[in-house]
Image 1 (cartoon, rainbow, N blue to C red):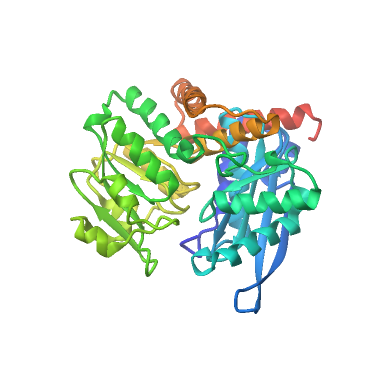
Image 2 (spheres, rainbow, N blue to C red):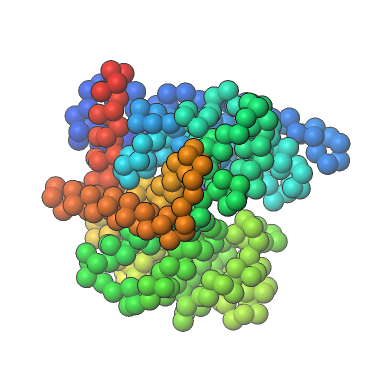
Length: 428
């Protein structure tokens, strides 16, 4: 969303087209999977605290549900677009498939900046979103979750509105809820930990030890915070973090060569991942422009913010030392950049594999909510590690067997599974 010339939906379709050709998919299946099954566009009138009514644009896209109910987050962002939501829904289909959970792909969004809205205004917006889409989601139809700039409190407001409309308790309709209100233990850690679980396996295959590795991460929201935590626990060092300043929303890179301390940074970070630049400088962090995260002399890059961040134009800035890119964000790398990455021999853990820990734990939460029985945190994280490790090994195994680029190997597995489900149902 940072570049108006970049269309993530076109990127998602281009990626699909390559693999569809590789798999020699029948034309009907190819055409079906290339576009969303359903999408909803609606307006949400919200009475602001000053008494005025402001109208917001909302979306929900259900790309494919052949393997199970659609699943995907709801993001609040001022630069949200219908094509962004379409792309993210498509990527969710492949994400659920590659980790082999019985769900399809969906995504939702609202064009807004929650940082400029009060809690009461955000609540009215959440309830308004549900009122517009309540007939088209449900525990066995489409299950939303939090995404960029939404959180457990937003999900609880949405759940409450959905249950009020339907007159019954249906906690399985939304995941990412607060623990104690149907949420799962381990959900906060899931996406960030999942990135590091796959990175851990990649480093094993590359004969690299985490304790000898340094990383630079874009983003300091929930995903990045927990990725930093687990990478440090494995012995690695994160020397740079990039995110926006909590006051002016301009992006900055925060560097500490001997390793950042996520706990101290969290103390000066707002709920949307914005760091207090002045306080960081007082804590001896070097403050650089936001795009400097990609220029750092490190072994590992972890984009964990928005799409379209690693491009052909900035690939020349990546250090020759970089060995691995682990994509914590959705669609952070453009196809043109992929070609250069492959030529450079940098090992990529593709987004819909690396960051699938979130949807995997969301699936766990959905199961727990539907049966009203909840697992301990250790059990959740153990199940998550098992699932992510198994998915990584399947992709890596195909990569080595057929000498594919890792992204292509992940797509082959994911798309083939969905195509088989579509064919078995007789849809095409």
